[in-house]
Image (tube, rainbow, N blue to C red):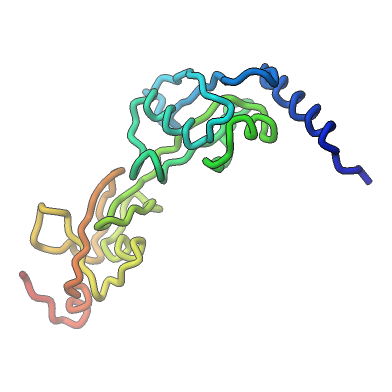
Length: 196
């Protein structure tokens, strides 16, 4: 049975992990490389970050360098940061609260990151990640936690007519919808649909 490492052994392991990344314990900054996942038209960007910075700051800086907007905002993004490892293997989404130094000490060896731009949509003030590129208005309402028999879905300011409840809508990143508590979809199900 292997004994747990003591503090001195942990320090040696941490230093060895950092040296594996080409860093010394005294290095305060790390050079990283970032790309936008599935967007070959975006050139990779290199930049330096403080080892004490959290991965949320890396995501934010990478987005600025790559000229992409995080949704819904840089402080609470739905977009994800992933490590890119040997043979261009992309890892699972990273915990954005982890510091760069801790990530380098304990994670797989990489200073390469990818931003995954998710299909984020907004219903009223609720941001959600759409699971598909096309969804029915009923599905969009359910995604936002709104019952379709009490709400109808509209394009904001474009229409006074609700979107047909079962007809799929093509979704775009950042697309906005308005849900109104008018019960028209529920009324339609009962055969009592009325135009506005």
